[in-house]
Length: 161
Image (cartoon, rainbow, N blue to C red; front, side):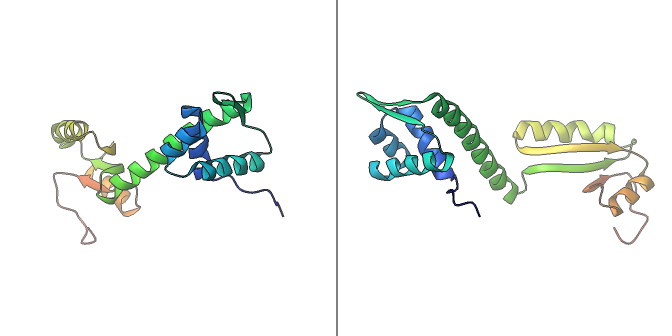
């Protein structure tokens, strides 16, 4: 069993704030915790990674070379965390992910430009994958779960749709 503590997002947020502020008190204000708590988070992160990240200097702090690299990686992880939260927020109201659309060649060229431009205007996180094929083939694909919806000129041939 590994007795080494885990790295947490909170620790990474603290390191990123410290890298930005270059001072424990200001970094603690950025993160919204006390200075002793921020100091403990950084110590726990150093312990978990088994490497010194921060040097205390007269004017505040200086990151070690490893500290600079890990702070950069922490910032990328924080950006991904924010992107994930934004995606999940948009997904709860149906504005994220990819819609797999099957379109008949007789309808797609006329309606899809309007649909696609509307999506781009809204600048949503919604993606659109379009496959053009004959209506009967598209229905079979829909039944297999390959499409989320169909755009065809005909009513479905099966009562299952």
